[in-house]
Image (cartoon, rainbow, N blue to C red; front, top):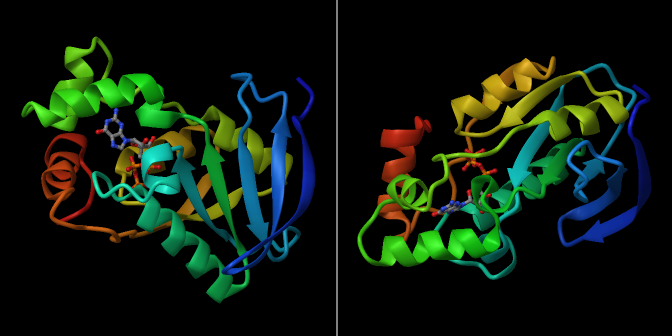
Length: 195
Ligand SMILES: Nc1nc2c(ncn2[C@@H]2O[C@H](COP(=O)(O)OP(=O)(O)OP(=O)(O)O)[C@@H](O)[C@H]2O)c(=O)[nH]1
């Protein structure tokens, strides 16, 4: 199969100047992007955040989750280092989509936790796959990364895509009274390193 291709443009941000790459013809047909700062040719492992779409957290600063602060912290860390990449995957709501995530939020308003709500709606606790992250890294010739995450399943999923994850960089940002029980469910039921 031929390598996926990317289109690219400059993307100045409040943390510094990135280049935004959009993957053409991703295997799932969605429009995924990567923000890159620094040298793509260096063989040094690249600091990477693989971030799943969260409209409510990333765009609207929702306090129900930790997504927005994690994305901001990742961009800031990359800018401080001068080299790194955000892979932004269009897999809203751990893969169930925006409308279903809002249905899951409504169930959580009634007392379910984030896992129970997904299961109640007929989904798995986490429906995500990470092939597209592999496609993006491959298209940019990056094979060795330091991954910013608290999620051991994300590390395993990327290794399964033949990405050499040489280090896991913890991402403990954005804890607040509204997401306290969401984060403890992530720790207790989804195995995130958050204690
Ligand atoms: N179904 C569902 N999805 C949620 C809920 N809260 C946040 N999300 C989604 O969870 C995903 C979180 O993505 P990430 O932050 O990349 O991944 P993570 O598994 O939290 O792992 P980290 O790398 O440690 O942040 C996003 O797709 C959010 O939209 C929720 O209550 N229910």
